[in-house]
Amino acid sequence: MSDYRQMWADLGLDLEAHDRLLEALPPTYHDVYLTQPHRPRGMEYFDFVVNEIHGLRIQELQQHKQQGGKVIGTFCVFVPEEIIRAAGGICIGLCSGLETGSGEVDKVLPRQVCPLIRSFMGFKLGKICPYFESCDLVVGETTCDGKKKAFELLADYIPVHVMETPQMKRERDYQFWREEIKEFAAKIEEITGQKITAASLKQCISDTNAKRRALLRLAGLRRHRPAPISGKDSLLIEQIAMYDDVARFTQQVNRLCDELEERVKAGTGVAPAKAPRLIVSGTPMAIPNWKVPHIIESTGAVIVAEEMCTGLRYFEGLVPEDASSLEEAYAGLARRYLNINCAVFTPNTDRTQRIMELVQEYQADGVIHVSLSFCDPYSIEANRVEKACRQAGIPLLKLETDYGQEDTEQLKTRVEAFLEILK
Ligand code: BJ8
Image 1 (tube, rainbow, N blue to C red):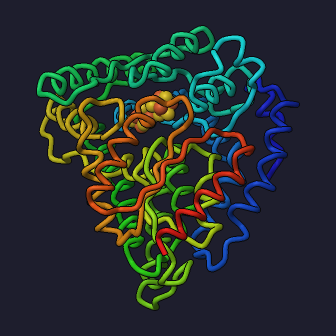
Image 2 (cartoon, rainbow, N blue to C red):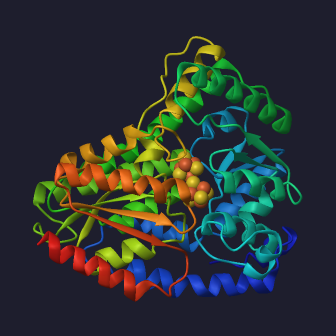
């Protein structure tokens, strides 16, 4: 990586703490990613992106800002990224997958809060995330209570706009969500100083759909046996999708898919054809949280799909591209985004139903449900998923974990025992 120290200093990062963070990442990445056998060549681009995670992309954000552009951070796949780009902004997913700055976090948050929330507070309070420090505004949501209250605290440190997300999916919730999206669009216009037009929104809807189509293409290729790419690599791509340049990312995913198509034709895979195939479902796994997938694939199984927000929930469902007015485009966005099956909704039977379908579509042998500790919506919904799987005769393993490494051996033992049952 080039020397970006001046840029980090200008952003106000705590350079010592930031150094410690960067030192910890390369060995982890090497062990989790670079030691995998039969990796597709197309993963080189994504390795490069991770290698430059606090470098080149941050430089791009700074260049954008120097030209008068704005950077907007988000924490949830409910926030329509199309709106941000249609007003000339750059959208960056800030969800964090690493425990950091716990001392500072303990001063503002109780310990019994999910690690994802503690993580984003830790990154902000510890001043170690150049993405956070590049943001002109961050967008929160009222999905779960923990996030909702944490955004009140976060507003003491950075400008926050909170979107009120519905908890049900009735017609009136959809109407409400459409109005909330329009209010969000007005806020983004105010921040960027640029009006959203029907043409700019149409273009951004089309670009974002192209990204989704590329990710859907990748997902489709994983239905083949043997799987042409590992679950860990797929998750990495899904994590990078949240912050990379849209056009470049889409092109690179499609290039990788060309290679994977050749692999499928040749019958080449990352694991033997008889390797157990698993669906992972549950709370999002934000970068650099690769713990559970690494444990699962180290035991010889292969993950074939992620029913998560760092996975299918992020890119399933396209936004209509034929809107003839801004009003119609907002309506299309509202419909598409309200279809996401997050566990904060009640009822949320569509999620369980989708998991059952995925098992068939991806020829999966079982499901591993992973919840972050202290996440009530997913931990409680895990029981619904378990019941549905039992009724359908689908083996399921429920795991609850955090960002620490202390439970690694215990998780490994449980995953190994589960694979024995599958055999
Ligand atoms: S759409 S899953 S990205 S809210 S893990 S903070 S729910 S206590 S992350 Fe999420 Fe949007 Fe839903 Fe997806 Fe709360 Fe649970 Fe923590 Fe969570």
